[in-house]
Image: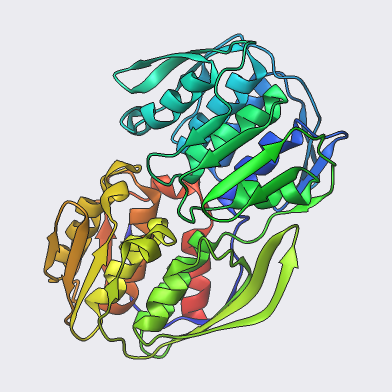
Length: 420
């Protein structure tokens, strides 16, 4: 597929937040009544969580555009749980199943099998579960135990998925848990559980959860910020662009991209800020303005971990040299996103120097010249290529099949903005 260049104008909506969607489905099984979830993300990753919960004995019904999750005690599945390409599915359901004390096998596609599972497995072993992995990776076998051991955990590095797995382990086991060692990783699980009436406290460094029944309050999933980020970045780097992304989640643990682009001089405005189901939401207005280089530290990078390839693309159009720290986690995503991003920028003539935990991008005048970019089957790299093409010129990707992971309608939405 070839992505075209051109300014972006008008307004656009984005799918429901993928991170919140996973958590809403899992939490729904522990509510006192059926839980209605609106605007669930339609991608394959969330479908992996839905299908896995059904295999674990949970009834999830469709009612028009809504999903209704019926409370249930998890049961040992008759077959291996297929997590497809979703690390969120594997890690968070591993915690739920450990807390539920059941036996289950987990597996995924070739990409997911390369992603590390030992960080969450080691913590859950301390909780009392028996977990056997393939050299720290999928496939794995879990055997939950009725005797809970450790209830106080310390994260070796900040991870929203590991933290959430431990919270779900406590929730499904009905025991209090405490997790320390966080550094402001995503707090969607904490916000969701608090909205549903859980007794939970957190302060960006630690979180404490007491076993309380959850109240089935309707959940309207906020628009996915990581999906909105592609349109925002495209408008920020493409002359003549002016867009409004409607109803996007702006959770501060996710919006490092906003701060980084603002530091580069981008014209960004949050309009109509509000709270929905415990999550901050706003309409995000972005207009083109010339950018200047900046330095992005590791704490800011943590709040923009999925958007770091986009920040590298923005840096390619900025005057000066930009450095981005804290990139090491990108090497174990759906692809090595450090290498994939460097490949994208090299295709349009931009020099990138990648260290063990940092990127240096020399800004210039990217020009695609009908280049062909490798996406490594990674949905975020495909969309990043589309963003790059908006300002650099036509860019062909080797495949766009992975878009169904998180944003099936991305290409059509991008074209509507370009035609406006």
